[in-house]
View 1 (cartoon, one colour):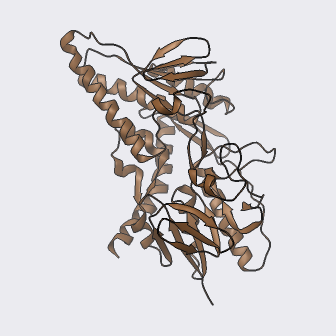
View 2 (tube, helix red, strand yellow):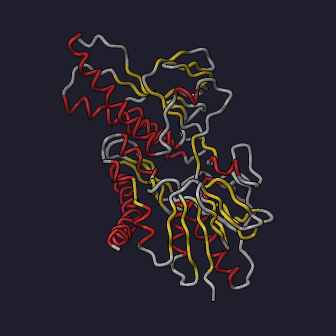
View 3 (cartoon, helix red, strand yellow):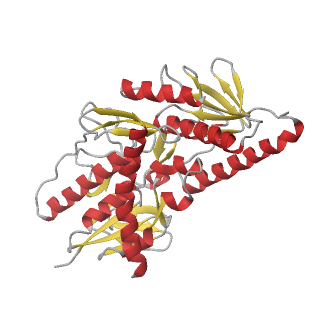
Length: 397
């Protein structure tokens, strides 16, 4: 019997999980396509920019990983489009036929066009190059401040501004503040001039999340010295300054914007229906309308709950949607109908700088402090260790 060929576009959390589950069948051949040769574990990028770990900690080699599975091929190319009639994925150099297609290209930072200068003058951490650029420029700026001691600390304030107080914004603000505190403490430098500002458009950080997480995170941010500005919206970003809707100006050395995400650029080139932020519309079974053999998972899909409220774009959601699509592919191979996707959040853990965290575990168990930090690290270890083990196997083949 001819093997079923499943093509996965995107080597993020969802794409990797789909590949792992599909590879368990000897009847399925998988081709994983990504324009990067590595799997980026973005959930741990805050440790990287805070200098806790090196770059290898947040990356897994995709060629080695794919090589560790029997019927998995890896193609490092950018996908240009999809020809649905021919059932082919078109890359820069190839046409790859498919029986089933899984689109798992993730998301990128959303820069609202009504905020002038936002895209031009802010950093992001949604990719390894952008995180590396920020980290290097930040450390260079710290060195410049130390050099300024010869002028008796006569140096302008060094402000880091985080725009958006959702999960990513809170984690970045906490990690950067903790890093700055530790840096000055370890070196006994007298000229401290780093301040972290978290600009929150709502009346509380982590708007809409559990009150325990909001309270615990806010207390930790204040303890770290983060300036949290509630009910402030950014009206304009200039080269080293932001203008808020109340007319207030704030100078900055670096700014990171985390005010939302939109789908990857690939969705703009596909012949499918998308929402205002480029997320692909999917049916309840996660297939594309009119194309039952094409699925979208994770951040690139417009995934909603039973009240049509968008589900938060997390690694957990990407993995659960990937597993569901694999089940539907197996059902279809047996001439059985697809099943609808449903998502139950299994908890959330937040990194809050240094060896501190807060979270809610399955069953509603609430934890914070060092214990929460250890649990978050254990979750990452359980995720990354099997991948690194398989990657080491694939490297030797």
